[in-house]
Every structure is written in C-alpha cells, then in structure tokens.
Image 1 (cartoon, one colour):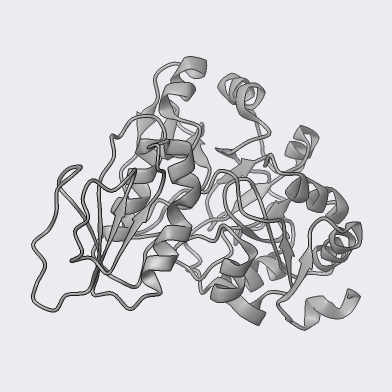
Image 2 (image 1 turned 90 degrees about the vertical axis):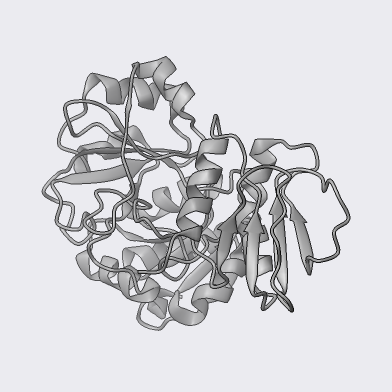
Length: 335
C-alpha cells in the first residue's frame, strides 16, 4: 500500500491487525491521510510536519483554512518538536490527564507548518488515550495532525462507518477500531495567555480542571478566526433543523403534518406518538453513556428525512456542559 498516499481509496482495515497499523504508518510517512479512532471521535490524520499533507486534510473535509488542527503525540518527548515552551500549569494538566481527552493550546515551534495552526503562533496538542492512535503515531514516527474525520461542520464520527458515510474515498485508509468510548471531542484549554481559558468543554470537566490548576476562564463561540477547533458558533450540525426545548419534560406544539424526532437524555416519560422517532441517550440518565451515544443518535435522526429534531436539555454541570455545548452549536442558525 506504499502508493496509496497518491491514490485515495477509502479502504477499511481492522485496527487490531498489526499489518493495518504498518500500512497506515507508511501512508502517513508518504504524505497521505488516514482516518483513525481515538477515545473521543475518529480523527483524519496526516504528518503534522508536512504542509502538503495537511492541505489534503483540509481539502478532504472542505475545512476552511482559518480553523486550526490538533496535533496528536504518543509520548511527551515529542513535545520538543511541537511546542516552544511548557508552563507549570501545562505540566500539571499533563500529569493529571494525559494520555486522555485533553488538548492544550501552547506556543508553537517554528517547525509546525502555518497551515496546521491556521497561521497562529500557538498550536493545539494532545496525547490520546487510545491504543490504535498511539500505535499509529509511533509507527508513523511523527506527530499526527488531525481534525475529526467528517465533512466540515457536520456531526463528528464515532465509528468507522460514520467516516465512510461522510468522506468515502476522500481518505487513503480508514482504521476500524470500533466505537469511540468517550463520544465527544476533547476538552481544550489555552495556556497561551495570562490566564488559563477553557476554549471547548469535553469529558475532562471544568470541575476537574479547576481542582488541578485553580480558576479558569471561559471563551465564547466565535464566527471567525478561532484559536482552536470547535469554537465556531455553528458546528457539529445536522442537516435537519434542531431545536432545544426549554426544559426537561417540555413538549413542543407540532405543526400540522410535521414529522419530528425527539432526543432525550433518559427514559421516555410519555408515549406521545406525535414523534416519528424518539432517541434515548441513556436509560439511566448517565451522562457518560449519553455523551458516548450523542453523535450516533443525531446521525440516525438526521438520516430519516425529518422536518425537525427536538432535544431535551440537560443540566450544564460536569459532562452535561460538553453535551449542551455540542447541541447549542448544532442548533445555531446557519451562517
């Protein structure tokens, strides 16, 4: 498969086969792009030091070049070629949460192409806690830059089939490592300013972060010039219009003939047959289970040709903050 980097195929290989990892590593080394599983979502990876390879990622996703990529490493020693400096708070966060679903925004090394960082002086970097992702980075012998493996702005992929559905043959190779265990993108914290700032909530909660580094600021959604992925006001969005209900248990007044779907956190409290389908994220109301199922449920609802998707809110504490962040961006008006 050494020539695959010059011929996109969209082939799927089992990530449990060592030869699959070797093939994927060769593709990365020769400037190709590979979809691979992490604990959060599937990523679309390339050699982080290769601007031409990064351009293929942007092209495959139809991603605007003002939106930076995350650089993934398998060993803290790889930070030497990625970041320019590491503050004390960064070391504390790494010690507490790496490997894991936490991305840090830090001053970048000059060797990182401007395309990867959208021309910014900072770089977003994380060490994923997934054996396939780590094996691929080690096999490639380079940090791997990669956003989620889906068309830009759409619901993120949590299975290999989601990658196929969205990108098809726009990828050299897809490593199938099963469903992602976390299901929402990494928490992003910027340490590039005078104070730590939460740029994107995720499964590492703000409560966990403050326990390690003290107070932390919160950024607002932006419509241009983001400094990290996932900051745009509309993102993770279904094609079907999505509306967040005012409260748990609230039910909308449907228009005559409206085919609507309902997404709720826990068990259904009624048998309202006005909805074409009801998706339940967790029968027990467990937020980690809900986050793991969120994007797959949104994709299923989006595939049904509904007029609208209604969603019950959850409390914005712990992982609920990340769930509501994704839903609000999904429900935001189209630009």
